[in-house]
Image 1: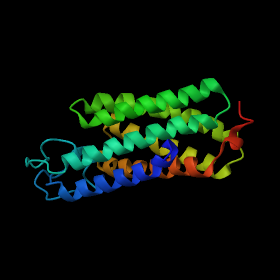
Image 2: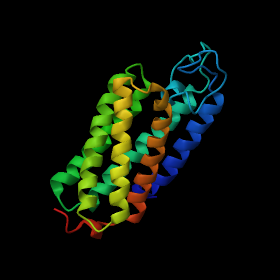
Image 3: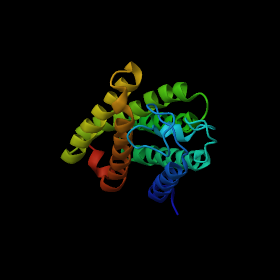
Image 4: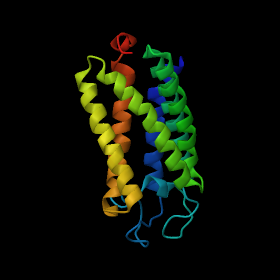
Length: 203
């Protein structure tokens, strides 16, 4: 099986493991440390990574969640490497490939105690790659992907604002999950429904 054919199975495995992790999460959220189980509205995905759940119990979700992040990071790193081959500009292709792939390494490291630092580095590198991809999508004749890229970047920047500012913190767990879903949709769409010819005139 070629590397590009590993992207979809890897993402499916990742989502499956993260969903399993939410089932095993003992409980506790940013609003109620005594709550039972995982709340999609009040818990962050990162709550699944700690050795202890927010209610103080041993976090039985941890290893499932780390496995999910491993497969997600690997799948997206492969995506950036494969998508870069569609770009005619070598310099831009290198930025997409290496910034995206290395960014996925830092994404995997958000499961460590250096979560906040890794988030900052990974988000920056990921955004650089997605910004370059968006530029080339706008130079193509792919109107649907132009719209998706704009919506995606708006959601990404909004999520980063909520995370960094502390304003409207109650909405952050939801926007985080919306961003996660949009990332999967956009990545799979760009992978399966675009080809090298779409970008051959984009310099």
